[in-house]
Image 1: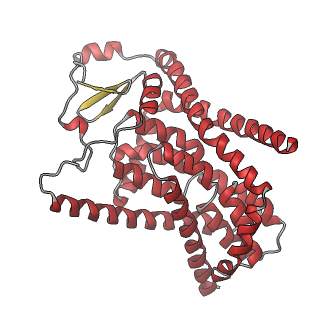
Image 2: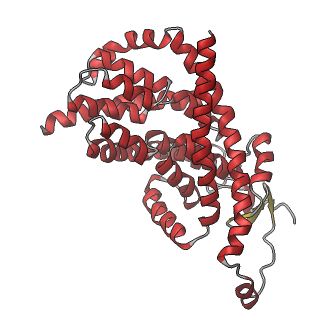
Image 3: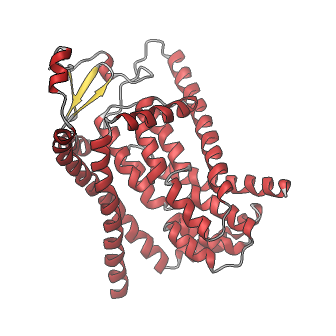
Length: 157
Length: 211
């Protein structure tokens, strides 16, 4: 029992330290460079890639961060963005679907490549898979919204 | 400084935009010290306001901040935003981590792995591969990699298992993060577990077809 408590305290401390070391500097960097030209260009390019999946440019920023840095770390940006701007539930949902399939592309992939997985498959195939799942969910939610709009013509939800 | 009812409160599908829980909105006031432009309106500290009157272009150019001024303005805001976010994540992560530890100690993880073994053969993996998979679901990819290296898997099996774990892992902690964004943590956990296994199965078939 004491050992478990020690493991919990030690593990929590390590986890929080790792998150702190990555999250806080990343938020500072993002806050400072968010308005810069290279960042905007990157976001615009990314937004163009995401547009066929039904995502708007607004949701592209948190999606890009989650894609690069991970759901747990990128989650900070996701929470911040959904809090700051009012985004549609569908947009947040589509971002969550995409990021649930692929996130932290650099770090996570490297860990598995290190133990012998084929990089092309776990990066390329996973990206294609994530795009396919998101496109499917995008089509399903769009159809559901259309049906709801038809049932209640002046419905306002 | 009116609250606009027009475009400000509607999203791209013409529905009212998401309203976040009060706690998050309150924290947003601290984090979002600056203004964020959202189309026709300006959000300042979590409140939607009319866009401020813009000065004439020459005034604007004169007032354009230098990099150092921008840094001095954005740095404290970034630090505050980072700390608020960190606190939000910490509250989600620590309880989930504790739960995962207890489940492991009670032998629940091992029991789940035993039950999952028949499923593993469907995606071309040995039953023992269920152990790193389930450890990945409940704990994280580092635990999964540790358990994976203890097994004797072929290169193709490692790739297939890696795909399943990369799509579905750390479901408790990351589900808690998704909940903070207003999504269903359980729903996404199920989606990721199923989607990961399906992706692994498809990859297994494709790899067999191409080799």
